Length: 379
Ligand code: HEM
Image (cartoon, rainbow, N blue to C red; front, side):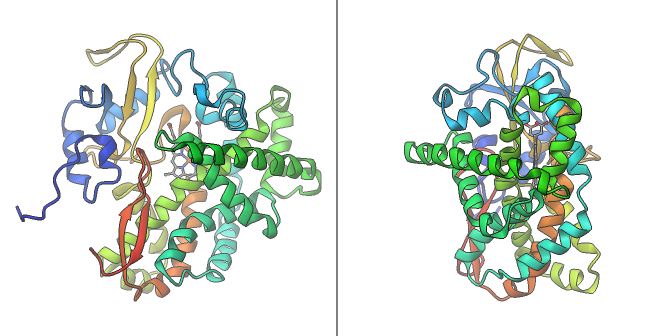
């Protein structure tokens, strides 16, 4: 083993931003599917079988029992959004909005989305590492804001507010970031409120379609529409930036990739799917047991947190389908949209990035792998 061989991550949460975590994830997938991790004081679900069993289990919930909202968000604009997100709910408050969102997102014209994003990304070529760091967040958010029906002049503010808002979802955020998240949450609610009032005038937009579908199933009556529209931007934010950034890393580390893609352009979406599997942006998610649960003879008591190590399932030799976009009732409804956007951005930027000296580390995070680039040779 070379002296500079990176040591294993100390646990799955540290693996997210580790330079080379995938042998470790592979070994996790080969080990027991469910185990207690004393260093994190919680359970781990690993490999495809472990991950899918937890995500399928009705008693494995997205929030701890009796704590629908984190205490520090109660009575705040962030709390008003968080409490309604499909991502953070179970039962009817999850199923009805999820059906509407998934159906509306499923109808998006992906070829048109790709063409519009390609056009936008070509107009904003990132000419430096610093610009690239901004662009991997901005372009996907601009593309989704466009899809929703916002005018171009509104996109930069929406993107900035979304990045500030998602700070309230991370346990790593400090007081100043949490305060910024509240200001951003308020601004996003106002912005989407205005857009909703105009939705009648925007019949072709994604918001227009969601409103029609929500009315049809009586969702608006139960509230939450506004919050879940904000949720479409917040779910796009870190995850798609990570996919795009990790795809840039793939182009930099695999010299034969760009010539192949130039020779055979239909391979671009294939390459993005492979990045989603091999170097995914979302490495884990969490579930909480609402009652005692048994997995193949392993008993997990009620009230426990389970870290569901999606990245280990992506590297499970026995896995057919990689759950980088989740699995089961909370599976991501935005996968095709994320891939269309990331493909377009990468196609627009690949030539310009080819000769740019780039090094990278990863943004601090417990679940999202998002490169942060600097000028320099490959480390
Ligand atoms: C590369 C980009 C993306 C990745 C890797 C990703 C990944 C995920 C994952 C893993 C989940 C499930 C979380 C869990 O079960 O705990 C999820 C949920 C979700 N995602 Fe994505 N996502 C991406 C992009 C998007 C985009 C572009 C949208 C919308 C435009 C979106 C909308 C959602 C929504 C609404 C949920 C909640 C679904 C539910 O709880 O039922 N995602 N995503």
